[in-house]
Length: 321
Image (tube, rainbow, N blue to C red; front, side, top):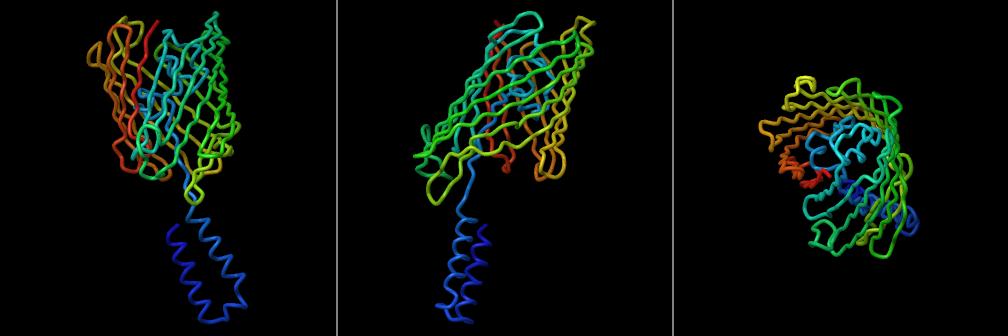
């Protein structure tokens, strides 16, 4: 961006020397305006709502049946979740560029049908002074709902919808997004899933000159397919000690695929160790996570060590009812 601006200045200096300024004033103005637009816009990246465990598994657990937090990855997987839980997550972007909180909880579980809801908040400039957007204030809240239905003992379909309201300085907007998913579970140890998300719009924060403005823009449409496996087999009646999650993600309109892999090791009943890795166009990122269980209470944490990542960390709390 800065290179574009300096090239424009060089062009302007040459143009003035070679031609009369009065005869070319319109062209000069156009060059400066285009350069200012290219260099003056910055997009604020919002934190993920997925949760610390799923993030530590590289967001690849789209067919998992861990708890109600799976509604943010694949709503269809809710039909096979065995534990009824309440979930809370806090996520933070690097350099103080905002943080978000979200809450998820079941509303209805009637036979093969499951309905869950979520609440979310994203804010910038209220807890600490952001370095990249000095003096800016952003507050966004939203509602999420997910419904899953098991069509058989091994196959389920699910849909989710989200409604968000974003407010930045003197501008505000609404956005609505949707996703559709399916989950196939031939056994208690193997699950396959697919989810299509990005239908609808999303709240975007664009910097114009010195102010951030909120506007509704098209959400990127994403297709993701994945599988999860665990060991040992449930038929052995032994506790699970190893979990593997794999997924491929395609963002329509962009070249290439994203490959995701995550592993979870449980050396003790109360401790989970997690590692995830994502690679794809412009991305090569590792993540590390921990999970602790105290009776029905779970505490989970993930850190993003790469400098290129926008995220800093996530902390999740959940309780099995």
